Image 1 (tube, helix red, strand yellow):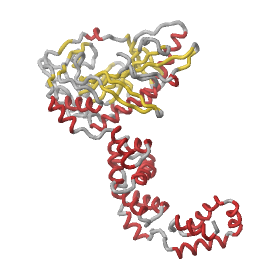
Image 2 (image 1 turned 180 degrees about the horizontal axis):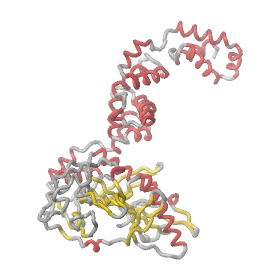
Image 3 (image 1 turned 180 degrees about the vertical axis):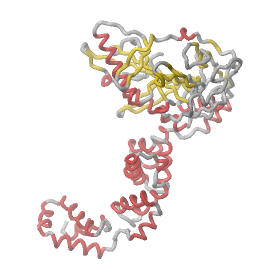
Image 4 (image 1 turned 30 degrees about the vertical axis):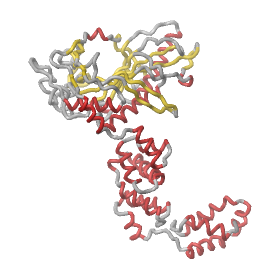
Length: 492
């Protein structure tokens, strides 16, 4: 992989070693399982789970005479992902055989793509602590997944489950443009977000549908690339950060002691928080790639690609920019609301025809805060977008105060129902009658002559009086009317 000319290292990313500064260089190969009902070359189910070897066709098990048949929907999903990554779509691509032996690979080779992938160069923009970082995409190619070896079922035996064998994977290969664990984590997070928006990968890392091989090397700032080590199959963004940090420090320690780095494949032990050697790192020629004789080259029509492009949804970066422009949101609020497509859609339903900032505050602070507390997602929220929008309308129309609105939200969350009907039935309307408010104000002033003297010296104490009046009216008084009346009565 070549270094992107646009990538300039930040000194803040350098690691201080015993003998000076070091720079981490990171490239990633992200394996994303295509969101499809069936596998890449067979009609077997690609659904996660099931009994061992329950989702296996004769093709997946490599029975003699079985021939692969390409799943066109998987190709469409790969093209859709490539377009979402602003990448070049190659109208002609070739499937190759990648030859190696492992018990969970029944064919003795993996059908993949090597020199002619379906998707070429692209780019991903990530935000890291307020810094914009551009990570180049080298390629995206389609390949079939292997099965799974099980070593903990019996003390003296290993088993093979081929349910995953033949599932379609998109391998997204980055350029070595990342310079810290934080950048790498932000990159995978952004990739996952884009694919979930596109509906091409569910991103369920705990199920293995998104995992990464991480290439890590270190060098003196500005020097040539060092020898890289590959950390295989890391399926947690948090673990990715830990693996990179440990591996970089391990390599720096070896180099500063006068040693050299062996190019190898390593595994990350999450329990110990360290990487360990697995095997020497293979080169491309070790796999003896050659075009698969059972599969013709893949030829894509320009009109077909254009049709997919025209149907793409609005992607996160564009959505964030629009939320800031159309609703007057801060960059932070727009990013929070756009983190998931479902969250963004929910917000837009609440904000439609209403003040965007108010809608955002209620969605982020009240709704998302409660969802996070109870471990729910926006797809299972007890308060619908229509109900939350109705609460916002009641506040905007002066029917209820902010405090009453929070009480109302709690009622809707636990009991459901129409917010407006609940306000009417339970007498929750805020008091706007100036006579009633004035009566409450005068009672508080009369009961607290010492505070009246203090507020003349310390005007900030006005808030105390507002609080007392609100308390005495059960939170139903209009806060602005209370504040205005207090200022008049106290001589402000």
